[in-house]
Image (cartoon, rainbow, N blue to C red; front, side, top):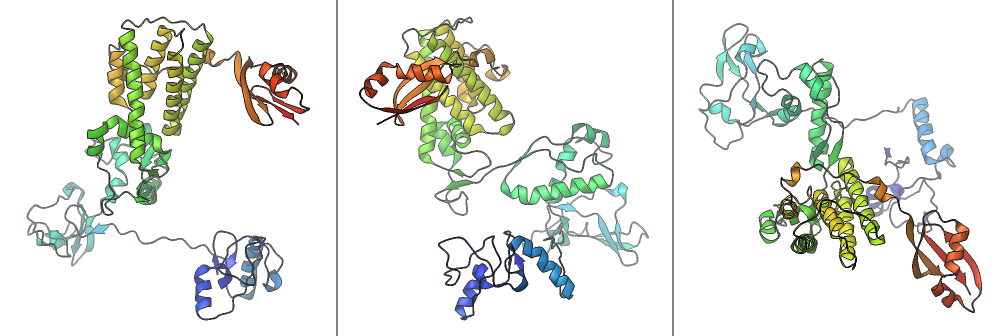
Length: 494
């Protein structure tokens, strides 16, 4: 009997493809024990196995029950009959720490014919690797060739004894390195309890999928064991985990063995490091797979060129950028709104969410808004200069090199990375008016600005009095007016 996660106990080929294939090959009878509402599945003429949650059929006293409920009853039935019992199987195996390698950490154990296995004396620790070894390439450890390492004396009785020649796997060290980082110069103990209590836990752990499966299991095991021994204050080492996704190219995991690796040197030589950084961060959320795209890299390069040209064209036309600026016109307010909306969005996205792709997307939207503003006849150079400076600041974590250069061009006297992170001006996010769409039978016919606090009745009246709407609805029967304040008015006509 097996539980495939749906709650159904599958013991027949109708609900397991491997058993289904076996039954077909040897012409065995296939009897379904679960009904389904799927119209594409004929349970009396199955083409393949199916797994579902549903009502039990052909199951004796369990017929008619939901399969999840039936599982519990089946366990009870087995125990009552004395032929089985419910149990949980853990997929745990013995943890092998030894390797037949030279470059591992020596295991400080000694074998004595009289005393058996005994640990090395503390004053003789650490046991160091010898240098008189020969690397033969054979299966045994290179330490077997050392004339100075193997032969020693028993720490208990003083008689001749032999050292353990296996070394520890490197994961044994990597399972507690974060604790040693807290007290790296301690030559009396692995780490001080007080320093661990002060520095731990690790606020944010970032690693690949392989780490999530193995390294984190080892690290948590060590931390819990050390906690049980009273050596650390917490039984968990990491407060938050971000597991990076794989990089995919041509439908496969990017790997040297497959031969689909993209050389960073080539990308950097052609486009620069900032383009490579921007594409990787923008192409996908960090926890998802990243599908490498040469076109995407080219697009990131073009975007950075747009920003660079915008900055340098502005500096060329405005060599003296004033510090003071005002917001007066409608276009000014729209630009100030877009800027502060972007600052707030980027701050939230990179401040804990690690949503770098959406942060960069909001910067791109700001660039579009700034381009529209530049084309305005009443463009305010002081306001635009202020926005360009803030733009460079919020873009700098993603593309540091080009932002450093643009910051200097904009008059920055020190490094952009010595500047404070921009704060959101909440007052700029308060809008008096909002752009809404006017629709006829669901199709957009016009856009207008209305007060943000306009009520439904006023909104309907304003839409019906719009010259374009009046022209398009003249002579037609208005069946219904659907007004959603702040968003749209849809006029249904016949």
